[in-house]
Length: 274
Length: 294
Image 1 (cartoon, chains in turn yellow, purple):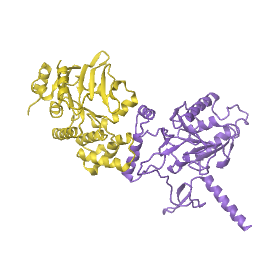
Image 2 (cartoon, rainbow over the protein chains, first blue to last red):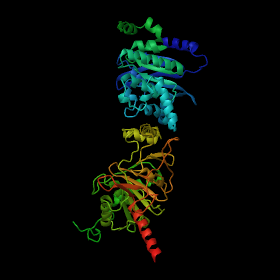
Image 3 (cartoon, chains in turn brown, cyan):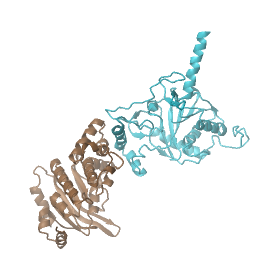
Image 4 (cartoon, rainbow over the protein chains, first blue to last red):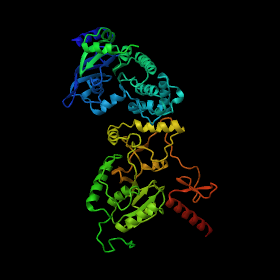
């Protein structure tokens, strides 16, 4: 009910020229044997919009993100992505080469632990350049210039370009992972707890950086987190999950300031105030 | 035990070329598939051989499956015919197959090699068999074998260039000097075994080239005249490199050289790594000199 209302609103309020949503998720469900991962999740994501997904541990957030990004195979539902060349396509029906191609061009995935998303034994420049080389860039000078540019944009000093990520701090690793993902100019970014494990001042800088990049590049993003402050800063819209189901969805400020569902109320009131 | 006559003449029954016929059929099927899909690593049921892994068990099995009684075999170890590996493998086939052997490249019909391609150009009626320690070019870049195979299947070779990128970033040039990755017929990226990159241009050859990895149980092949391109960057093109000296023995300037340290004060000389090529050239020089005098 809320969702339908939201869709109507997004269609009116969203960027005027966009006639189809970038991502149209319909009835995604995933079971682990008899246990429920997530079920009946539907939403639209419009170009330039950031969707936050919050909920406690085990509520199905990461399962949902895995299903959307193609890392997990959902049992039911559709994930329709508005591709550049063919228009809206159900990504679950794509062949593996096509899905992997999407995964290194228009899509990006930022892992919670940068070690999962980086090659720790390869220099920062090589990490950023990998996606460029994967899509056919074969000019060393150009790759290096692009890598230098991107390190600058994520506030990593240019003289660290030949250092390996294992010599970087946690915050730098996370910023490097973001640079590595955004270098091919994706249109949709999936983020799984992007600020998890970072201390608060580093978190704040990272969030500021991500917010800037999202605005500047017109990115759409799906951000999974259990940290309400993250969605408050980043997300335009919010979905609250509990036990594999979406219990409430709406504009971020609306949901956080005037929670309707009992669980959301609990969640919002659980945040510690300093 | 020290009877090194061919086993056939020694009065024992032994299958020609050591391997039993079913094994040879299995290897030949793998070879046919490898030739049909140049650069693709075909799995095969590698057998235990009477020598340790790393001594060329893959190459020996491929050679055994290719040999006919009329063949003339040459075995190369790092370019030389007279080092342990070459001598023992040559002896092995003299004993178990009774084939003729030679050290002269043009006389051989089958050449098994470790780490070098002969300097003398090969012909269409010759087979070059390589001993391969690690057939997977993506091995040290992508530790998961399943993922590496998927990358081959989907032609996702960006990672190969990441390795070259790292080389340039660290050393200022592509420092990979042996086992230099190549792309075969615009499709599969292949490890040419640890030959120096000086030999890479010779991979486009009129001879049939077969690669056997015994421990890793893989066979792959380059049919005659297959297009083989060494990977590089537009602004850092591939360069086959060698020591910038002529051979101290035969004076050749076009052959790959070994650096030999001759005393404790660091004096060194550079000599052809291909012993047959060097010896042939020295013979020619000697003959010409005698001819001039006569």
